[in-house]
Picture (cartoon, one colour):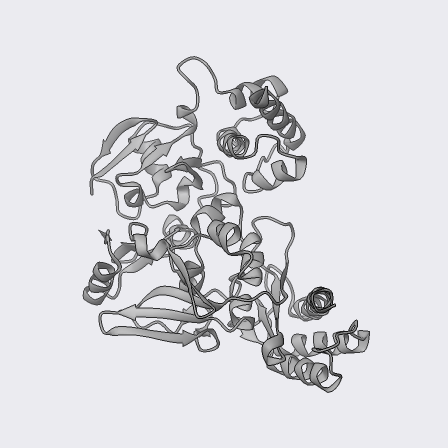
Length: 155
Length: 290
């Protein structure tokens, strides 16, 4: 089937999409956007997190056909040209990236938290990131990055 | 495989009547896992996410009607005051990403014995509104779960909504797992006080082939509270009463040993959950009456 979807502000089209295919597969394999990572394929790890109509979701659990006519924003769509999003900058500065596989999903989840909750406490940060796993277990640096990004967003 | 994309519920029912083998998909948090892992290759997917009417909830005669497409995050944010137990169970589902997508309707459709909302729906006297081109029927939650991942839906039917009586009375839900997020319950328990009827509802999850009411526990506690005039002038519950309630809840379960826990552990944990949640609910009630 054909799927038309707006991705990072651009109208995109894909043909011969298999009906049982995930939005994650569509993004990575058909639209050339490998930022969202494919790991667990069951919603456990959050590394495929994207915005779907402005709501963070696991793109592995969205059928590609369900994205027809909708707006998707992936991690590739957070930076403004060469200028990283403040959340991305904070991850770099805080050293919140080890192997980097979980980073795109965590960045999107943290991005959503900070725009909803300008001054999140640690329990709120932990809760907001509870659906994202880092197997390098670099969680403390990730916490630092989110605190830093939130602080900058407020100032 | 067909991908069916109805815009209205009427259209969805017509499609389901024509292709009863079509698998409904809403949040995808169960269906997509089965597809991704090649556990299921349905002839068709019936996408329900375009149907605006499924995303609405309303209240009539003290009963909240929650459209099958309302995600958990909205139950939590919009219905916590009217449906405390359901909101509490919804908060324990998956992660933020899962709660943004997953629906109570989907929990009912999947009918997993471990589904988080089932014990609350059973304890709180909910009913499931199912529809087909032949008409609509309301199935009490107590008659909805038929077996492991089997429910009372006929092949041409879709879940339209779930009806849950609104309440200000205390309700509690608790589940056991290895962490707070992303846990499939090892076992779960819900208790609902019904002061108007001087009755208590109680149900277990993930501890039998289906979620089920703990009727002996309900009857014991209901009788005890009436006999000691507790609804009018509540006092702290005796430990012996809470303990007996917990024992009867554990007896209602028929759990298995599996990767998440042993049958013996589940029974023990259920008695602890029942004892604790009853304590919390009763303390809450005592505070409200005083």
